[in-house]
Amino acid sequence: MYEGPVNDPRFPGLRRRGFLAAAGGVAGLGALALAGCTSPSGGAADGGGKPRRGGKLRAAFAGGGASETLDPHLANLFADAARAKALFDKLADFGADLAAEPRLAASWEPNATLDRWTVKLRKASFHNGKPVTARDVLYSFRRIADPKKAFRAKASLEPLDLKASRAVGERTVEFALKRPTAEFPNLLAAFGAYIVPDGATDFDTKPVGSGPFRFVSFTPGRSAVFRRNDDYWDGAPYLEQLEFLVANEESARVNSLLGGQVEYAHELSPTTARAHEGKGQIEIVRLRNSAMQAFAMKTDRAPFDDKRVREAFFLLADRKELVDGALSGAGEIGNDLFGKGYEYYADGLPQRAQDLDRARHLLKKAGADGLRVTLDTSAVAAGFTEAAAIFRDQAAKAGVQVKVAMGSKDSYWQDTLESGTLCCYRSGAMPIESHFSQRLLSGSTTNATKWHHKDFDALYQQAQSTKDKKDRAAVYARMQRRLYAEGGFLVWGFADWILGTARTVRGVAHKAPANTLDWARFDKVWLA
Image 1 (cartoon, rainbow, N blue to C red):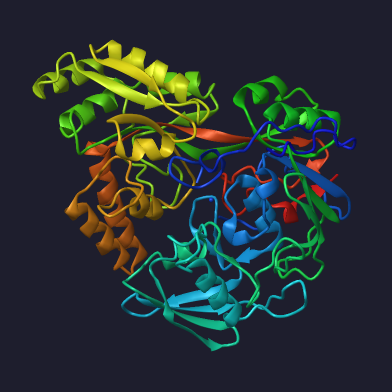
Image 2 (cartoon, rainbow, N blue to C red; image 1 turned 90 degrees about the vertical axis):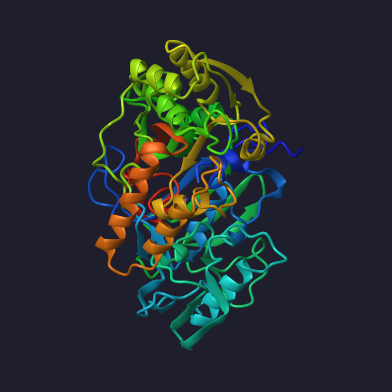
């Protein structure tokens, strides 16, 4: 296995141990799955006077070794996504509330039946000076949808009928859809749905995008260097140069930041944050509501095929104890629904609290006194093993015996899709609509709770056929009330995503969950 920049004399703090698996990297089943304000806002790393131009920022990320690529349609890890957004653009991206906002698209308008949308492009150019056109958009999406390829955004673009879609002008695309799709803008903002030049196939020797930075050099598993695109449609970046460096070990990223070899370190632990927050050496940035933390109950098999048992398990959990213990306090409690703080979230429902007496009563009514159940977990994600142990002890107080079973990090996500009855689960930022479509419909391929209800499917289709946003929000609220009452996700918390920066770094967004537009957005960052 390639071991990265072990002996690079420029960066003695950088070391790497192994490959960061996709499940721990970005969007996907149980992973920190990837929207945006043009003006970042937040705390200390944000402020600091008038932006200044110039300088080079070095950013340390966990990487993928010698197999790394700059092909934006193959982006899988956080490092891939950060490099892709520096070089390329999407038609839309997600704001901090996970609502889609225009990027290369200047506007989008549906027809009366929501099965045909017209997208108008803004005036933007690729790095070679050629304008971004409708042909480039259609080429990019058709490349992603190629049935012979495994590009990341393929599933997200499935509602598009790309054969029937067409260019109706140099900067206008008419998209045909297979069915009414009210949340069509979410397709444009899908993770990996970047626009590349018509006919582009070579991305690792001299990639050409329309993004804020231009390509300089790339060594897989080691470094990628970019320079400012002075002609960027959204305003030239402040930085003159941007370099991404690979450091898979968190300790290496922290030590490089402390030692001055890098100015930005991605993915730090709560322990590291506590050790350095407010101490003056570096700045700690916490991106709130970045990762849902949950236990997934299989609703199609005993004992969780009885909704009284599921409700009892909701009431077994002491959510604050789980956040404090499993996340070291770096997060906030959940309420058994995905997407806290996101667009359409049902925040009016009562906060659920531990109620052991009510849990015992429900279990007795369900004939589940003295219940024994296995909780599958793994070291595949931070906090999983700790959460399993804490919940085991909480359940024991109500007479429920939870046996914790450790699974393989390599196969955990796939194993828990089909096997077992209860497992540790997490998910990153995505629109609530996408959470429904990917995980909670009868035909969803990543339906970890086996939530199969035709009436729930019908509500989703009703929402997608509803043009008025207020009316659509009411349908989503109805769906969430159903899940709150009897769903299969016991959502106990939402974890912070933690970054570290040098004290000279300004403009880092503090209100952007991981994988949204303003996360790892270096065109708005400057060095004081």
